[in-house]
Image (tube, rainbow, N blue to C red):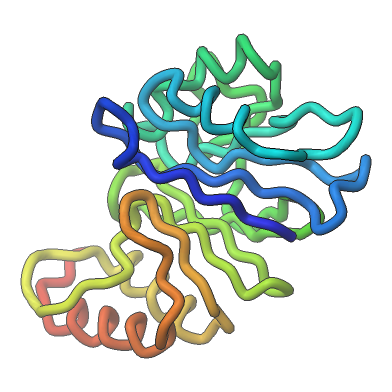
Length: 201
C-alpha cells in the first residue's frame, strides 16, 4: 500500500489534509481511494500531479469521508464531477453512495481497513485502521491530548482503550503532520489525560 499525503495548509482556503491511498503495484484490482477531499477543488490539481495511479485506472475510484464538516467534505462535488467515484461515509447525505457501519471492513488501495465510529469530534466521525499495515486514519478525532481538562464521553474513553491495544506505526490526521514516533506512547498519554478529565455518559 502507498499513502500520498496532501497538506491542506497549501490551499488558499482553510482545508484539511487529505490522502490518496494506492496499491503497492497499482494493480487493476486495487481501489484508488481518497480519504477526505478538502474544502474546494484544490484536491483536483493535487491528484493530477501524481505520476502514476495505475495504467487504465481511474485516479480516484473511491472516496471515504471521515466526517461531514466542510473542510473535509466541501470539495465532494468537484471530485464527483471529475472522477465519478463511489463515496462512502458514516452519514447519509445526498452525495454519499454508501453508508458505512461501525466495525465493517473496506478496501483502500490493496489493504483492508476497519471502520471505527468515534462520536467525539462529530456524530458521524470515523477512523480507519489497517491491521496489516499498522496505519490509522484519524480524521479530526483527538488522539494527541497533552494535558488533562475538558469533558469527554465514556464512548470516547472506550475508543481510546481499544486503539491503545492496537499495533499502530503511523497515524494520519485531518490537520497535523503524520504521527510516526512513539505512537503507542502518545495514545497512552492521551488516554491517561482523558481519564483524569470529566467523563460523561
